[in-house]
Length: 150
Image 1 (cartoon, rainbow, N blue to C red):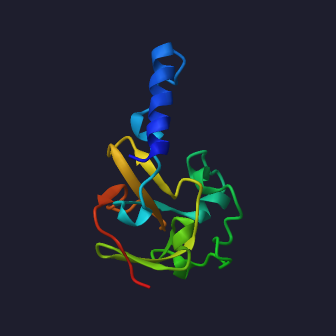
Image 2: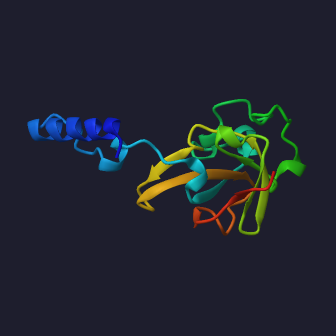
């Protein structure tokens, strides 16, 4: 634990004892996130075409905070990007990632596509969001190993 971490923990304990700390704050939130390359991957999916579909629901619009016609690297969304393109941590933009039998290029980013503490898995994870038309079998699977192909 670094000196900075020790100070953050001491402040939290003091505030907690005084009854003014956030009660839903978890101890792991006081620590800096680990190196993203050491984290297991959680792979989910998204479909930019849902953003422009007539009758789209609020759930359909979850990934519609920017122009759905283009991914973050400026590439226009076309059918051939589905299944081989993913939203990744911005530090991986342009790289090819392999997770299990999945292989995709990081062409997109997203606000929730970053290292974060997963309450479900009770650990730090790195999210990848693969562009798909339908919910794949591996949605929300936890993968201990992943690699950058290039």
